[in-house]
Length: 525
Ligand SMILES: Nc1nc2c(c(=O)[nH]1)N[C@H]1C(S)=C(S)[C@@H](COP(=O)(O)O)O[C@H]1N2
Ligand SMILES: [Mo]
Image 1 (cartoon, rainbow, N blue to C red):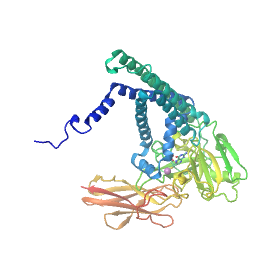
Image 2 (cartoon, helix red, strand yellow):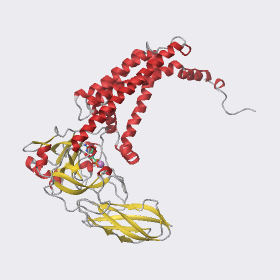
Image 3 (cartoon, rainbow, N blue to C red):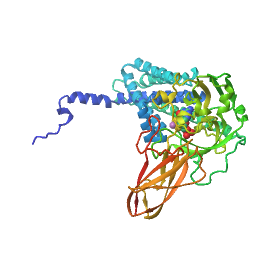
Image 4 (cartoon, rainbow, N blue to C red):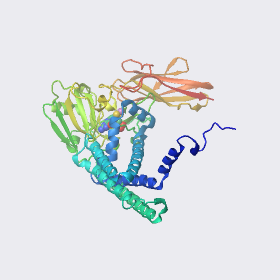
């Protein structure tokens, strides 16, 4: 019987060559070289992290390269990442980068066997490349290059040691135990000290963020000069601050020292001005319930939240600075170099655009923009709610495209009318009979006039709108549904204060917000 399956390696054409290649890969000297490369990278990264922890987190090569990757990622891929991984997109990016680094370092280690000098030069060059990435970040300082350069230097030296005097296999490496022991000892020493240095770096980070957190907690915001009315008491109206969605490009949270914080208002203004935190608070705080949402939110999605904000009205500040003729865009810049653009007329049209300093009575959490963020009701976050704000520049739309606009998102981004079913959950099994259906609807600025629910192909039913929402917040709604046994489709649609009902047509968030009716399937038994 002849087998149609390929025979053992030795009998297929080219087998001996393949076998030799496999031998080379499995050769202890090669494994050792790859390990040397990975250990060199670990030592370099640990040294860099320690240095960055002492300088500032943004100077870490991992963070610098990661942020560069984020900025360079095409919009559709970014959309996909936000949609698929949500808040896990950043940790996943860091893990992917670590994997690439391990592969690269292993490869360099193997190169080092034959061409040690070239491999060392390549390691140092990678450090320079990382430094270039870090220093070209919009909010970088020249000193930020140091950790990356250090990483390259440390990696080159360790690679030289591990593949040279401490690790070079003798003529018959695998069979010389002394040689092997020497390498293992050296490798163990490098691994151990890298872990130790990395641990120290992590501890310093935790300690510094702990002290920044205490400084934040020590702040008492003055009571608002314009308090909001009584709090809405319906459960679910306010989003707990700890659950408030977070969307930004910051791989490491910008840590802003409130004592050093300044806001500069400049550009096309008659009287440029600069404010520190105390001067800002001294202008008097307003308190408002406002719903903020992200343009990337899909129909039915979670990137929306409502809280009681505290902030300083922005319009009087701009008027004080004197908006120059022709200026039609307020460009906000943040401590991490983000730029967001808002139409001047939007800020000045009487809405409660503010420099927010508090959520729910407390200073802003670091991830939501501490110490000060902009907040513009009625426009998506990317076009009016710059976190960690440091600058407002009056400019012309024709002259400057902010970050997201350069990536294809719309210049003008008023929030689209939308509605969501929160209860029952998609694909839920409910008991036939009376079923509580509930959700939210929003059209910030215009308000919600009506919300309707459709069961299967039945008529659209008006649902009950709960009191306590305003034009700038979502409105909660509920409906008592008499569910017959079987599978059902529920759909919701809202009509805004101008009388316009949200369109049925499904559109993806890009470039100016999703459209379509939130629809889900449930089974009544
Ligand atoms: N500095 C900075 N501000 C930013 C962003 C950012 O990436 N960097 N993202 C914006 C976007 S897209 C949204 S939706 C809101 C989200 O604010 P939150 O994270 O406090 O919910 O912040 C906006 N402000
Ligand atoms: Mo967003």
